[in-house]
Length: 280
Image (cartoon, rainbow, N blue to C red; front, side, top):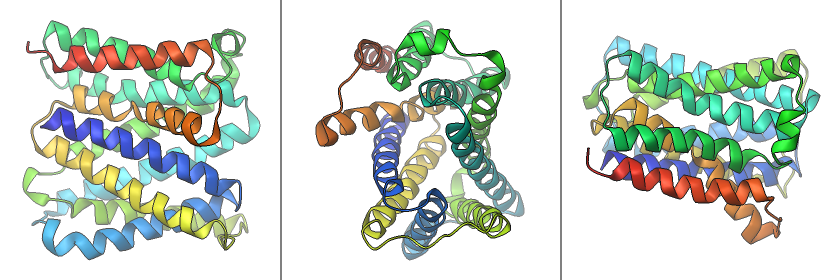
Protein backbone atom coordinates (compact mmCIF):
# COMPACT_ATOMS: atom_id res chain seq x y z
CA UNK A 1 0.00 0.00 0.00
CA UNK A 2 2.84 2.42 0.83
CA UNK A 3 4.32 1.94 -2.66
CA UNK A 4 0.96 2.63 -4.32
CA UNK A 5 0.41 5.77 -2.24
CA UNK A 6 3.93 7.07 -2.96
CA UNK A 7 3.49 6.47 -6.69
CA UNK A 8 0.10 8.20 -6.58
CA UNK A 9 1.73 11.18 -4.87
CA UNK A 10 4.32 11.36 -7.67
CA UNK A 11 1.58 11.38 -10.33
CA UNK A 12 -0.36 14.12 -8.55
CA UNK A 13 2.79 16.15 -7.79
CA UNK A 14 3.70 16.08 -11.47
CA UNK A 15 0.22 17.08 -12.61
CA UNK A 16 0.17 19.91 -10.07
CA UNK A 17 3.57 21.15 -11.26
CA UNK A 18 2.34 21.04 -14.86
CA UNK A 19 -0.71 23.17 -14.01
CA UNK A 20 1.44 25.51 -11.95
CA UNK A 21 3.79 25.91 -14.90
CA UNK A 22 0.87 26.81 -17.16
CA UNK A 23 -0.36 29.33 -14.58
CA UNK A 24 3.13 30.88 -14.36
CA UNK A 25 2.82 31.81 -18.04
CA UNK A 26 -0.20 33.95 -17.18
CA UNK A 27 0.73 35.39 -13.78
CA UNK A 28 3.81 36.12 -11.68
CA UNK A 29 5.57 33.19 -10.07
CA UNK A 30 5.01 34.60 -6.56
CA UNK A 31 1.28 34.93 -7.23
CA UNK A 32 1.11 31.33 -8.42
CA UNK A 33 3.13 29.95 -5.49
CA UNK A 34 1.44 32.00 -2.75
CA UNK A 35 -2.14 31.53 -3.88
CA UNK A 36 -1.76 27.87 -4.80
CA UNK A 37 -0.42 27.27 -1.31
CA UNK A 38 -3.41 29.09 0.19
CA UNK A 39 -5.82 27.07 -1.96
CA UNK A 40 -4.23 23.85 -0.76
CA UNK A 41 -4.47 24.98 2.85
CA UNK A 42 -8.17 25.81 2.44
CA UNK A 43 -8.86 22.37 0.94
CA UNK A 44 -6.97 20.68 3.77
CA UNK A 45 -8.93 22.54 6.45
CA UNK A 46 -12.21 21.40 4.87
CA UNK A 47 -11.12 17.74 4.97
CA UNK A 48 -9.37 17.83 8.34
CA UNK A 49 -12.39 16.81 10.48
CA UNK A 50 -12.41 13.46 8.64
CA UNK A 51 -8.72 12.94 7.88
CA UNK A 52 -7.02 14.65 10.80
CA UNK A 53 -5.71 13.06 13.98
CA UNK A 54 -4.26 13.89 17.38
CA UNK A 55 -0.90 15.63 17.19
CA UNK A 56 1.87 16.32 19.63
CA UNK A 57 4.01 19.44 19.79
CA UNK A 58 6.69 17.44 18.00
CA UNK A 59 4.31 16.66 15.12
CA UNK A 60 3.53 20.36 14.72
CA UNK A 61 7.22 21.20 14.84
CA UNK A 62 8.16 18.58 12.23
CA UNK A 63 5.29 19.72 10.02
CA UNK A 64 6.27 23.38 10.25
CA UNK A 65 9.91 22.53 9.55
CA UNK A 66 8.83 20.53 6.49
CA UNK A 67 6.80 23.48 5.23
CA UNK A 68 9.75 25.85 5.64
CA UNK A 69 12.03 23.41 3.84
CA UNK A 70 9.58 23.03 0.96
CA UNK A 71 8.99 26.76 0.50
CA UNK A 72 12.71 27.50 0.79
CA UNK A 73 13.30 24.94 -1.94
CA UNK A 74 10.71 26.61 -4.14
CA UNK A 75 12.22 30.07 -3.70
CA UNK A 76 15.78 28.86 -4.37
CA UNK A 77 14.57 26.76 -7.31
CA UNK A 78 12.80 29.65 -9.03
CA UNK A 79 15.81 31.87 -8.39
CA UNK A 80 18.06 29.21 -9.94
CA UNK A 81 15.78 28.96 -12.97
CA UNK A 82 15.90 32.73 -13.40
CA UNK A 83 19.70 32.93 -13.28
CA UNK A 84 20.82 29.53 -14.60
CA UNK A 85 20.22 27.11 -17.42
CA UNK A 86 16.86 25.36 -16.96
CA UNK A 87 18.03 22.16 -18.68
CA UNK A 88 20.72 21.89 -15.99
CA UNK A 89 18.89 23.22 -12.94
CA UNK A 90 15.80 20.98 -13.28
CA UNK A 91 17.51 17.55 -13.42
CA UNK A 92 20.10 18.40 -10.74
CA UNK A 93 17.36 19.64 -8.41
CA UNK A 94 15.18 16.60 -9.06
CA UNK A 95 17.86 13.96 -8.50
CA UNK A 96 19.07 15.71 -5.33
CA UNK A 97 15.52 15.78 -3.97
CA UNK A 98 15.27 12.05 -4.67
CA UNK A 99 18.66 11.19 -3.19
CA UNK A 100 18.21 12.97 0.16
CA UNK A 101 15.43 10.75 1.59
CA UNK A 102 17.23 7.66 0.28
CA UNK A 103 20.44 8.61 2.08
CA UNK A 104 18.66 9.64 5.27
CA UNK A 105 16.64 6.43 5.31
CA UNK A 106 19.66 4.19 4.79
CA UNK A 107 21.77 6.09 7.33
CA UNK A 108 18.87 5.78 9.76
CA UNK A 109 19.12 2.01 9.63
CA UNK A 110 16.49 1.09 7.05
CA UNK A 111 17.12 -2.22 5.32
CA UNK A 112 15.99 -2.88 1.77
CA UNK A 113 16.32 -5.91 -0.47
CA UNK A 114 18.61 -6.16 -3.50
CA UNK A 115 15.76 -5.66 -6.00
CA UNK A 116 14.60 -2.51 -4.20
CA UNK A 117 18.18 -1.21 -4.05
CA UNK A 118 18.56 -1.71 -7.80
CA UNK A 119 15.20 -0.03 -8.34
CA UNK A 120 16.23 2.99 -6.26
CA UNK A 121 19.41 3.40 -8.32
CA UNK A 122 17.42 3.19 -11.54
CA UNK A 123 14.88 5.68 -10.20
CA UNK A 124 17.64 8.22 -9.51
CA UNK A 125 18.91 7.78 -13.06
CA UNK A 126 15.34 8.09 -14.40
CA UNK A 127 14.78 11.38 -12.59
CA UNK A 128 17.87 12.89 -14.21
CA UNK A 129 16.97 11.64 -17.69
CA UNK A 130 13.31 12.65 -17.60
CA UNK A 131 14.17 16.15 -16.35
CA UNK A 132 16.92 16.70 -18.94
CA UNK A 133 14.91 18.74 -21.45
CA UNK A 134 18.11 19.94 -23.09
CA UNK A 135 19.56 16.44 -23.29
CA UNK A 136 22.64 15.12 -21.53
CA UNK A 137 24.91 17.47 -23.46
CA UNK A 138 23.67 20.41 -21.38
CA UNK A 139 24.51 18.57 -18.16
CA UNK A 140 28.02 17.75 -19.34
CA UNK A 141 28.61 21.39 -20.24
CA UNK A 142 27.44 22.72 -16.87
CA UNK A 143 29.88 24.65 -14.73
CA UNK A 144 30.27 23.41 -11.14
CA UNK A 145 29.48 26.85 -9.71
CA UNK A 146 26.13 26.98 -11.48
CA UNK A 147 25.04 23.73 -9.83
CA UNK A 148 25.11 25.02 -6.24
CA UNK A 149 21.64 26.69 -6.25
CA UNK A 150 20.13 23.58 -7.86
CA UNK A 151 21.76 21.37 -5.23
CA UNK A 152 20.47 23.61 -2.43
CA UNK A 153 16.93 23.58 -3.84
CA UNK A 154 16.97 19.81 -4.27
CA UNK A 155 18.27 19.32 -0.74
CA UNK A 156 15.47 21.47 0.65
CA UNK A 157 12.86 19.53 -1.34
CA UNK A 158 14.35 16.26 -0.13
CA UNK A 159 14.20 17.34 3.50
CA UNK A 160 10.53 18.18 3.04
CA UNK A 161 9.97 14.42 2.61
CA UNK A 162 12.35 13.56 5.44
CA UNK A 163 10.73 15.92 7.95
CA UNK A 164 7.18 14.84 7.12
CA UNK A 165 8.30 11.26 7.69
CA UNK A 166 9.15 12.19 11.29
CA UNK A 167 5.53 12.86 12.23
CA UNK A 168 3.61 10.21 14.15
CA UNK A 169 1.45 7.60 12.43
CA UNK A 170 -1.68 8.61 14.38
CA UNK A 171 -1.51 12.27 13.36
CA UNK A 172 -3.31 11.81 10.04
CA UNK A 173 -3.05 14.88 7.84
CA UNK A 174 -2.96 17.36 10.72
CA UNK A 175 0.84 17.99 10.47
CA UNK A 176 0.25 19.30 6.95
CA UNK A 177 -1.64 22.27 8.44
CA UNK A 178 1.53 23.39 10.22
CA UNK A 179 3.56 22.65 7.09
CA UNK A 180 1.36 24.69 4.80
CA UNK A 181 0.89 27.56 7.27
CA UNK A 182 4.66 27.90 7.66
CA UNK A 183 5.14 27.66 3.90
CA UNK A 184 2.53 30.30 3.11
CA UNK A 185 3.95 32.62 5.75
CA UNK A 186 7.48 32.41 4.37
CA UNK A 187 6.44 32.90 0.74
CA UNK A 188 4.25 35.90 1.58
CA UNK A 189 7.01 37.41 3.73
CA UNK A 190 9.55 37.13 0.91
CA UNK A 191 7.04 38.50 -1.60
CA UNK A 192 6.24 41.50 0.58
CA UNK A 193 9.92 42.16 1.33
CA UNK A 194 10.69 42.13 -2.38
CA UNK A 195 7.52 44.03 -3.26
CA UNK A 196 6.41 41.21 -5.54
CA UNK A 197 2.80 41.02 -6.65
CA UNK A 198 0.74 38.09 -5.40
CA UNK A 199 -2.36 39.01 -7.40
CA UNK A 200 -3.08 36.48 -10.14
CA UNK A 201 -4.68 37.25 -13.47
CA UNK A 202 -8.24 36.09 -14.00
CA UNK A 203 -7.10 33.61 -16.64
CA UNK A 204 -4.55 32.03 -14.28
CA UNK A 205 -6.76 31.78 -11.19
CA UNK A 206 -8.47 28.41 -11.98
CA UNK A 207 -5.11 26.82 -12.80
CA UNK A 208 -3.61 28.20 -9.59
CA UNK A 209 -6.42 26.83 -7.44
CA UNK A 210 -6.39 23.35 -9.02
CA UNK A 211 -2.58 23.25 -8.83
CA UNK A 212 -2.66 24.15 -5.13
CA UNK A 213 -5.32 21.58 -4.28
CA UNK A 214 -3.41 18.97 -6.28
CA UNK A 215 -0.15 19.76 -4.50
CA UNK A 216 -1.86 19.35 -1.13
CA UNK A 217 -3.40 16.06 -2.27
CA UNK A 218 0.08 14.85 -3.26
CA UNK A 219 1.46 15.88 0.14
CA UNK A 220 -1.36 13.96 1.80
CA UNK A 221 -0.70 10.85 -0.28
CA UNK A 222 3.00 10.94 0.58
CA UNK A 223 2.28 11.42 4.28
CA UNK A 224 -0.14 8.49 4.23
CA UNK A 225 2.53 6.40 2.48
CA UNK A 226 4.97 7.07 5.30
CA UNK A 227 2.29 6.39 7.92
CA UNK A 228 1.53 3.08 6.21
CA UNK A 229 5.01 1.94 7.17
CA UNK A 230 6.80 2.44 3.88
CA UNK A 231 10.60 2.86 4.21
CA UNK A 232 11.65 6.46 3.58
CA UNK A 233 14.31 5.30 1.12
CA UNK A 234 11.56 3.83 -1.06
CA UNK A 235 8.64 6.23 -0.56
CA UNK A 236 10.92 9.23 -0.98
CA UNK A 237 12.43 8.11 -4.26
CA UNK A 238 9.06 7.02 -5.67
CA UNK A 239 7.46 10.38 -4.82
CA UNK A 240 10.42 12.08 -6.51
CA UNK A 241 9.48 10.48 -9.83
CA UNK A 242 6.99 13.36 -10.26
CA UNK A 243 8.82 14.76 -13.35
CA UNK A 244 7.54 11.71 -15.26
CA UNK A 245 3.90 12.78 -15.12
CA UNK A 246 4.85 16.41 -15.82
CA UNK A 247 6.70 15.38 -18.98
CA UNK A 248 3.90 13.05 -20.11
CA UNK A 249 1.28 15.79 -19.64
CA UNK A 250 3.45 18.27 -21.53
CA UNK A 251 3.60 15.86 -24.43
CA UNK A 252 -0.13 15.06 -24.39
CA UNK A 253 -1.47 18.57 -23.80
CA UNK A 254 1.18 20.89 -25.23
CA UNK A 255 2.51 18.48 -27.87
CA UNK A 256 6.06 19.02 -26.64
CA UNK A 257 8.64 16.70 -28.17
CA UNK A 258 10.63 14.40 -25.95
CA UNK A 259 14.40 14.35 -26.42
CA UNK A 260 16.02 10.89 -26.50
CA UNK A 261 17.22 11.24 -22.90
CA UNK A 262 13.64 11.77 -21.70
CA UNK A 263 12.39 8.73 -23.61
CA UNK A 264 15.11 6.67 -21.96
CA UNK A 265 14.14 8.17 -18.62
CA UNK A 266 10.50 7.11 -18.95
CA UNK A 267 11.57 3.54 -19.71
CA UNK A 268 14.05 3.55 -16.84
CA UNK A 269 11.39 4.86 -14.44
CA UNK A 270 9.04 2.02 -15.38
CA UNK A 271 11.79 -0.53 -14.79
CA UNK A 272 12.63 1.07 -11.44
CA UNK A 273 9.05 0.80 -10.22
CA UNK A 274 8.89 -2.87 -11.22
CA UNK A 275 12.11 -3.65 -9.34
CA UNK A 276 11.02 -1.78 -6.21
CA UNK A 277 7.75 -3.69 -6.05
CA UNK A 278 9.40 -7.13 -6.38
CA UNK A 279 9.53 -9.17 -3.17
CA UNK A 280 12.88 -9.13 -1.39
